[in-house]
Image (cartoon, rainbow over all chains, first blue to last red; front, side):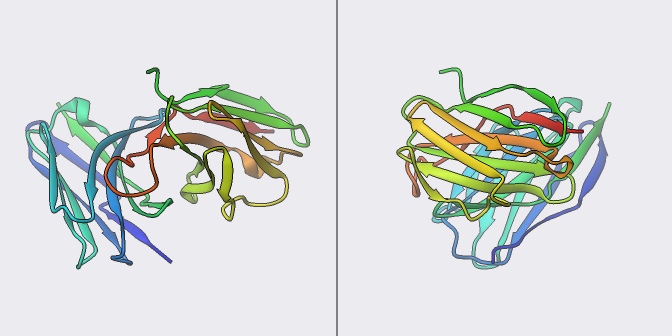
Length: 110
Length: 116
């Protein structure tokens, strides 16, 4: 059974810092990995989708990498801003079985 | 497109009552998913449909839960009778295709259910 772990569970940084969120998974036979953002009381917003054949994806200040063989993904956020404060979830997918991590709660202090 | 639409956004009911959650997927998407999110268990897949047909309902917690998709633009998740432990946020998501490029899942805003 696929297990997805996100470390750290919570992170607080001052504005302007670059930061890395980690996601690990136990079964490397995945189709893709998706990073989401969830604001308090809100739904999930898709940030980046990495197909199993890809190594990374970039969108603006966000860069996600995938190392399928080691079962790891990282989400890099450059020049963090208070508006980046949210919970970030990673999810791995095989077929239509999608497993989520518990998330990393990020706080960016002005 | 307006994205995935869910209603109601909030539902408060008493134990034993029937609850119906509704979802309208993104037009043209052929997969629809129902998830439940709780503090204790995080996000869990309950059931998903392909072309209106339920494919995998192994995540449905018990017989009190049922889901239907009568057409490509509408799905319901019903809980009867509801219990306090069903309190959670229920998300609906849709996607185009099952695997490979283009199968990003798009989530609705969720329905926050509170069972008293």
